[in-house]
Length: 428
Image (cartoon, rainbow, N blue to C red; front, side, top):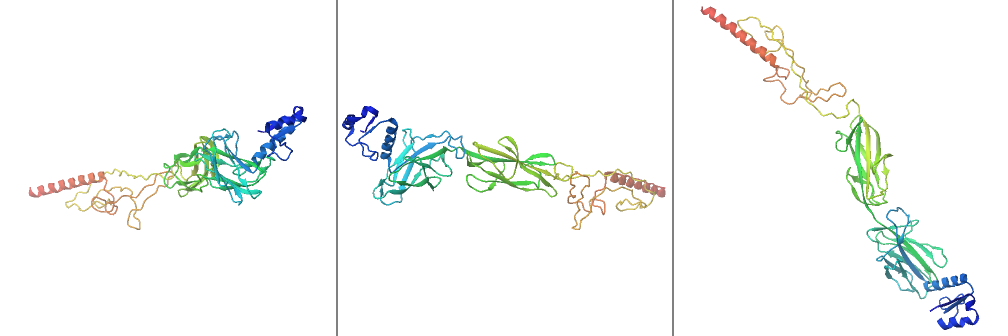
């Protein structure tokens, strides 16, 4: 028991009553650890003496207070921090010989203080080097202060005590020096972790028409990269697919590489939305994860020559209707000329107008023809089986028009009738 007397009520022989309660040794200003009673004339002095008394019980000690920061905060903001509950474990070690009581482990309880205390024994030395580390909870992260894992204070003077970071992300810690006469208190902050994912969408705007990634014309593509989670560098990521493993407060960076069709120009590549809000931001772009889901949208604006909205039109087969022709009346002849019609006048065959056909390339295959009209579709070369041969006009590779065939049949019938008439006259 420690007895304390203040002001006139404890002057003179009243000290005998204090001694009777607690013991014979009075506090003289230097023996706080050994004094049995305190006697002072005013409360200000009594306060200082009680401070000395408390400090005497803590000399050469290290206390650690764990505080939990609200998940709504970011960075090193500790606004609203409260003392932790039970279950936070800290280990203390020393590299100084002559100090006892180390290593040791302490765990917080539910007493509301969120604290543990280490009391090393300074047997033969006056100062020691100590390291304190915590067992990190998987659903929490360390919140540093000015980059330091802990904030330590000399309780006797109120001065800060320098610390150095140690440990790993799973077991962060700090080291410090403590004198046998010091009482040092350290605060370590943690914040609950909120898991998050990041998704980046892609839109193409080509000659004023919008396409979602995957629906854009051929020869247009873009590859996405994302940094993170954590300190991971940039790696490839599919468009529109969430990347998990992030935490609220992370800062991923999105970038891309682009491939365009020949002759097209990339006018701009911008981040046009972040979490549903319209933006106009350049690439690469670094965004802060403020919630469980971060979604960005990147739009590429492209200009291509031609009047069509799609720079790569779908090839189409064009069929030209053959011209309608009327066969001329063949001259009367007893011996009709045989052979295939060629369409040359003066041969006894009908005159026809042939349709236009693909020219032959140096490889022996028909050469493709392209329209010079802006925006018109590409015309592919004819398919196989269009060379010269049966059922085609000689030298052209094209089938005879139906009207030509009909005219040829009429001519044949007329010639046959004339021959039959001549034969009957000879017999008659």
